[in-house]
Image (cartoon, rainbow, N blue to C red; front, side, top):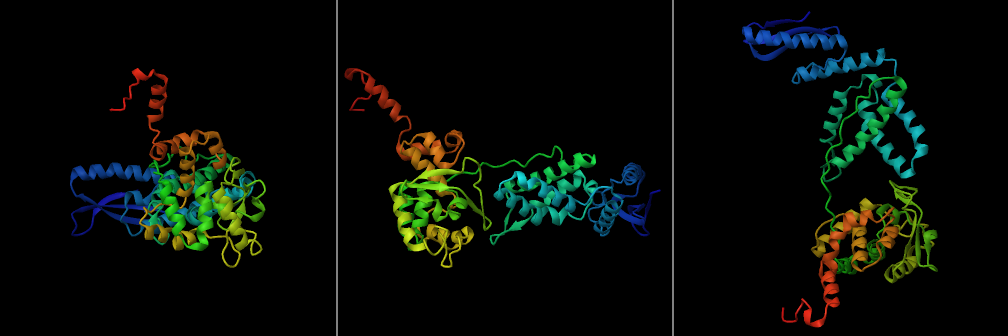
Length: 399
């Protein structure tokens, strides 16, 4: 039975209670008076009920306590021993082996990284039923404090949502098999700020291509004028190049150093070579064909490491040319906006990009077209004007 008292020489109330077989004494910030004693009695009643039910969270009541981490770790071990469900880590491995048959290799790699880097470290040693909603929310909060990369950036909301979705899928499957309530149920995704795309203008494209290091001109020419994803161009093999038909056959993608299938079904496609792409690939053929199966590779024949290329080539070139810094992925966005600006059929562009339909084009890229073509209403005006008799034309030369 918990009790309320004060330490000798202190004016603040102290809670004396038992938890995990240990006597605990925690000083509060409440002064000793009848009103505060009554208030604390209600808190103690709730504490004792939670201790009895096995859901007491020491840190939520006494976050500054030196004993909180030790006692909660002790509770976790006890919960694990008493649980009739497997450890999260063991079940997650089983779940991954069962589910990977449904996934593309690139997605398998993505999930495996999430498991190894985040979920196993945090939940691996805990019994499935010992994980509660507070644990899941605390884990998400901790992800927001994780720093990564040389720039020491925090994880994006997109990345955190991806990690949490994997956790939810594991707990959802486990809850069905072992008949417990999924603690991640109804936890909403973090709101995403819309990423602003920053395609290059045509003059910026040529400025970059004409000034980038000579041994990377072909690589960036193909990137800018095909709209290929980084994983697709880095995984491009010579067997995927059809010079006779002037086509690039996208059949694979390089993700974390491993070749697999492209991102989506639609991503498996044939891209038409423009004259500039054809010329760049012909030049590249003389350099790397015979040295490597990869179209773009280092001196040892290994495929490009995009992080290394971005750091050594992409970023310095932008800086030297005074161009606004942006992701290398903007080469893909640039291809889309240039095709639209040139008046290519949206259906054809969607096929070149590997999109299922034209919805993405109009949603993401269309607002950039007026800047490139000056067709922001003037085409409509010209159509109407041309349909009117000359003496009624609303566009007079003197206007």
